[in-house]
Image (tube, rainbow, N blue to C red; front, side, top):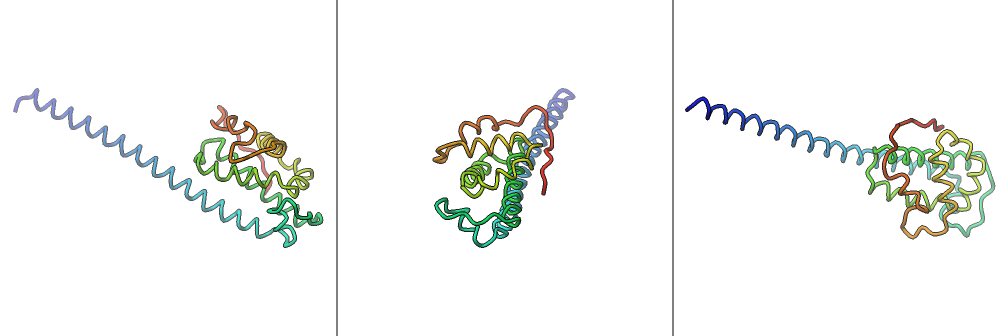
Length: 177
């Protein structure tokens, strides 16, 4: 075996090793991203269930039925809506900054938009809006959702395009728990 042939074999093995490593890293990153999104889904679904269960009994049906008479205002109800909005602001943040899959966000966005339009959340938003002043993107999202007339499975009044890609500079909003 000549030195030239040995050099070519060594170069080929090196290239194959590098390609194999790159493929492994890419695959590993994909698997990690899928697992991270699955974990986010499970965690946020559990929190959503806890928050929805914390609604006062007379408010549970009102949040689903826009024609139902609104329950009286109460600190418990306001706190439940605040927790819900806080969860949603975190979901928007995760999506905006590329930590949440677009398909998962699409599911959550439809539910969020539906809830934001209910008379119950609209009423509570008047008092809770100031809690989110440090996160103007969420304020804009809520106000566009509440101002939009028709969802029909689409993005909220063109807002989806504005949040498709993360902004250049990442900042962490101050959102109350």
